[in-house]
Image 1: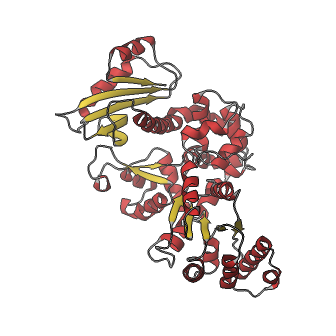
Image 2: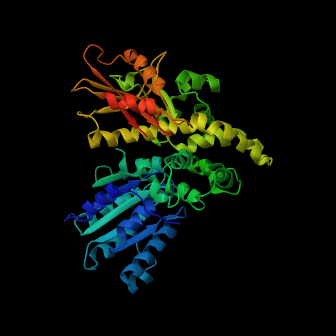
Image 3: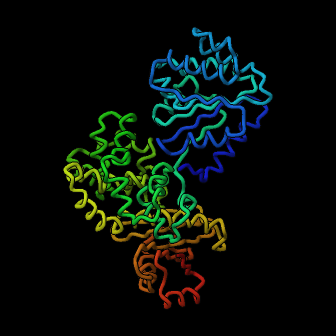
Length: 465
């Protein structure tokens, strides 16, 4: 099942580049299965385009395959027979062809060409500067190995540095578009349960969409705990080409998934010095797998000592929390035991945390929609030694502070949650002497009549299901 969802801004960027009167070079990259090829396919659907998927085979085999693609695209018999044609010759023929409109040339998994020939980015730089730059051509270089794409096309040391017209780091689909994948699910709870496992990776979502009426746990058993399912070993394939010492990275991610978010706690769990973790943490952040979060009120986030490390990807967080630690049970055929562990632990920690992220996304929507008579500019979480607040939004210009809680409970929440939040407010150190505090409560199961009545009487309280 293929379904194209979201990507409006990314498509618009590509259309802008296509409509430029001059040539354009686009670098499109992102993690495996995030939808790069689907985006490209959607974009070139009604245009004159040559799409080539590079492989890890030799450069000669790739060049010959590309030449044959180009010959078929142009119906060019001489090019088809020119087995010894160089990259420059092929691109020169393509750029001089008259097809009635701008030609789009796509090389997908571009990083493999640089892998088999480290000098290939220099070859591509020469082709761009001397052949394509002044022609009516749009060149898209796409890839799924983030570290290699950055080093080969975007970093200062790359021969292609500074030549791109646009760069697109394709990220996961946001929750606000998640419902578009499903035709039968109707409740927000059902959607969040699945989003907490699949995240916003279209390929993962499609696995669960195949039988959307299944109980979430049946879907997990069939598509993740089953050793024959590709999701069972997906993290190995995701990381093995990006990093060396994969065992060290797996141990680090397992420790974080187990709830160790402070650097000292991670180091303690792994019995290593904190200084020895720096390069691993940085690599995982560069790969958009890990994030370092600080209280939103911190003035210098980079220097803050309150940083917590969290796994950004919902599926990887789920896999390292529930699958990886139980591999021995799964490999020995004890799938039912692991599934029972997931039943007891999924919502208590994992889904509740994902729900907080969903609520933060909703906060930006409310901000845009004018839910308050001001607009906040910073949003995140707040914590100190004794207090944790799920939602904290700052409006420095108007001295407004929004505090919120997010509850993924089975029952409606009542006034006690609001009172508890009000008691936490003085702990937030931001602009204590000159601020107006507002409150927002998110609940997957709604609110009691008593709390709804209080919210109607107060202008500083907003309830959001």
